[in-house]
Length: 195
Ligand code: GRF
Image (tube, rainbow, N blue to C red; front, side, top):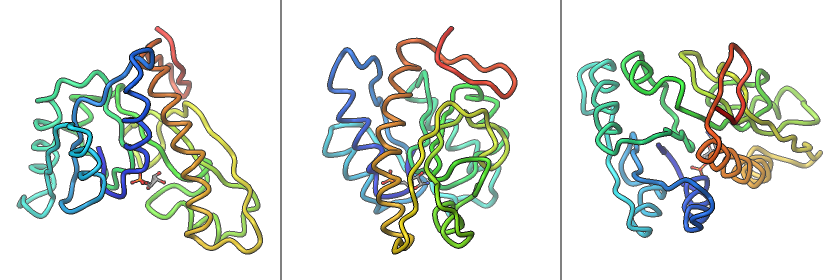
């Protein structure tokens, strides 16, 4: 599921060409039209769907519709690869425990939509990215993996985010593969690959 430029998606598509990777991107579902991520999917011949909040009278109806849309593709794992909307109860009831997300900060520091900007403004010297299992909170789910990125003195939000994204996409690709091959085990706050 995507909302943006799709660099994480592109990395997943590059990885899935290798059968040994264990996972395939069966579909790409977006919450908005006209984004680069949808072009990347289309260029790779992957089915796409857009379910936009603006097309619904209320947020719960959107949530049910996007859950229904994702279900059409029968995914074993739902990967939020730069998906910028909070999923609701209906979606979580249907796919809970098999949704993973990536966030451009070292959680629990700097959750939310502006993790890079917030770390920079706070004056953090080290930030990074987190791959986690999605729960009902905002970036609160059990953590699967994290990687650190040093904040340079002359960084702005764009330069720092770009360096984080390099690390982030390789971490996401690694963990989607691990989960596909080995399963996903969650016990309380602890998440790991395995059955
Ligand atoms: C990633 O840093 C993701 O964590 C954040 O937005 C970025 C998405 O990038 N929420 P892309 O669309 O995969 O290029």
